[in-house]
Image (cartoon, rainbow, N blue to C red; front, side, top):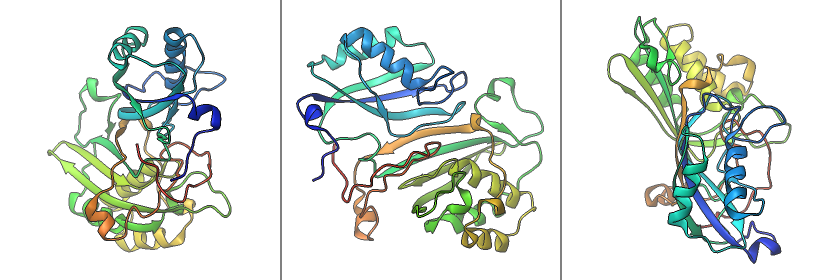
Length: 291
């Protein structure tokens, strides 16, 4: 089993955090020279509580305006932490739009990004003439009717193992853009659509580019045949425009093998992907590490 910890980190405790946040007023997850970020807020709160600096590593770096219901992160500390009290203490220091749901001691080799076997994102669309004002920060308003049948037929073309270069905003030579899309469902209550995507990895802005392209299919602006050619074309210029960030939610990060997928050869190798809105490349471990 590979270790993602340095010798110094191996002598420290590894802690896993489960958190949720409203990304509206933040410049994304990662600390930046300008702008307020989720990672910055977490590290400042932990510094206050632990009396030493820590680096909080998330499962992925969401863009500004993107939300999370189930973001996972980890950090190292030489101190033994009362995890139950830490939850209350962090929520006492963090702003109300960032909430920590769990803190737990975890295996030394656990890595929030590299140990992940799959991630689930949702994108929400209000497909009605008028959108309620309280939905404007959490969904995209599309007043023109989208053809549900075409949307689902287009979604089926994206399920499975594909090179998703056409849906990646960052193009890097000699980079593996092949990902396994396990699920791309479209929930529909008549006025709202929720695109539910689960894959072993997401490229930079991949979800938003996929939804934008499927919207063209749903509006009859792109045929299913053109969508199939787009996937094979491996050219970002062929795809539709990315939808805006406010409708996107990181819902769940999975660290447990699915027996059904394992039986079919999936999850055989962990993709050390930049996930949605994280373009930084990292060395890819040969086998997944377990929490």
